[in-house]
Amino acid sequence: MDTLLDKPLTAKDFTTDQDVRWCPGCGDYSILKQVQSVLPEIGLKREEIVFVSGIGCSSRFPYYMETYGMHSIHGRATAVASGLKAVRPDLSVWIVTGDGDALSIGGNHLIHLLRRNFDVNILLFNNEIYGLTKGQYSPTSPIGKVAKSTPYGSLDHPFNPLALCLGADATFVARSMDRDPKHLRELILRTHKHKGTSLLEIYQNCNVFNDGAFEVFTEKSSKKNETIFVEQSKPLLFGDNNEKGIKLDGFTPIVVNVNEANVSANDLWIHDEKDRVKAEMLVRFFNDATADNHLPRPFGVFYEEERNTYEEDFNQQIENTIQQKGKGNLDDLLRGKNTWEIN
Ligand SMILES: Cc1ncc(C[n+]2csc(CCOP(=O)(O)OP(=O)(O)O)c2C)c(N)n1
Ligand code: SF4
Image 1 (tube, rainbow, N blue to C red):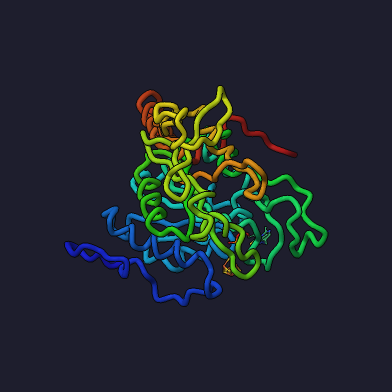
Image 2 (image 1 turned 135 degrees about the horizontal axis):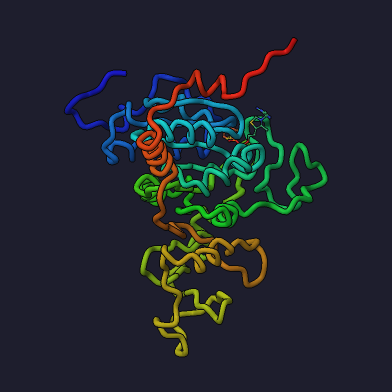
């Protein structure tokens, strides 16, 4: 791969000559565009970046990135990326995965990656459906979803992906959406900056098999009242004119009108990305948007924590052991100490 030595890279430098095979109008285009435009800002060379994906429409991503990449196997991008990061900690490793790829077949690998805390960035494209295989329900599809494999409606209780990730002790969890490019850009940058496993869930519209799944959060007419964009040290405010706020009544979040005389600015929930308990509550703002008194859906960085990365500890352990015992010999290891003959 050529290196444009001193010339700053642009989004075009991260664009390949491959035909993009997503359906016209798919939310994946917007995510690709934002990633390609953010990478020059990150300042790494193309050969220092690797995109690893599993299987799915979203997982075609590495073909379109002029970086190193691997379209791996279903649900196992997490395993491939872990191996790569363990031996090449200097690389910027990105995992691109869908809700099916990450949470069905790859669910087990995802939670172990998160608890180990490899310094990799996960972009989880959530479209609440299997796109590539033409519209079967996924682990994030809501109850009642009529899809190819659930003709009478899904009976499965859906995963709350970010609650699952916090449950696995992820050190960075965040949410954005394909239809808010500015926010998505900012969050991709934050995802990159975090040292440790960063998980960014991106609501992505599959306009062919699940059109409008996130409409209530993305459409101008409802977005301001149905979403809340959390920012560090700022109060939780939303509504057409930020007239609504979230306040904690004991451990119960409630919506208050900030213009009412009995509500003071000091009463409002102030967002703190380091507060795990509050992050656990925020990711549980997950109600059905048609239910009475439901809470708005939050977007932003919910939680960030500093913890040793797996590759640091792993390579340190190898170094310490070599110092104590000397370099090992692979042949000796494979033959083992015990040999026997079968007559
Ligand atoms: C071992 C294996 N099982 C099943 C499949 C079929 N398959 C391909 S992609 C996919 C799900 C894709 O859904 P998602 O991850 O949500 O990605 P999307 O296509 O929606 O972006 C499935 C079940 C496969 N390729 N390999
Ligand atoms: S099937 Fe859906 S997710 Fe896949 S490319 Fe088409 S619109 Fe996008």
